Length: 127
Image (cartoon, rainbow, N blue to C red; front, side):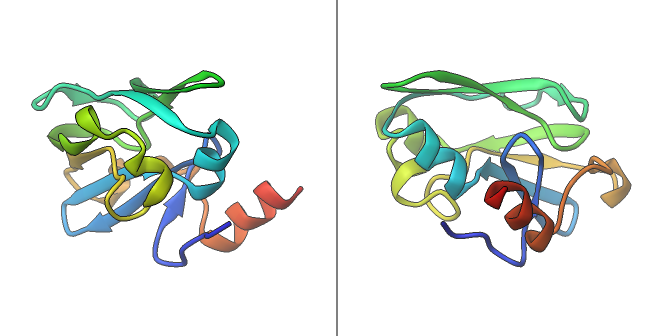
């Protein structure tokens, strides 16, 4: 399972990539492997204001459905439209082509204080 050093991770298996005042959010390689083949992704509306911890999206596999929680407060600025036709991009490329949505944050303090670095997340999924 891949855990990238340049990302931060929520205990609920979302990853966050910070790029200036925008964060990109997806689900971890561990999470997509646990769910198996994704068949549907429900994404938030662009323009939606969110609070860290909000249930913001849903991913469904042949096994189960899981809520996706926002790791930050801000405004949804973009969603990955490609997932509507090809939700399996989350399985084949969870960190690149399979990202879920982007959020504009006021500053990094809008990120959940509970986000883990790669080493802490690796420890979580290894135990």
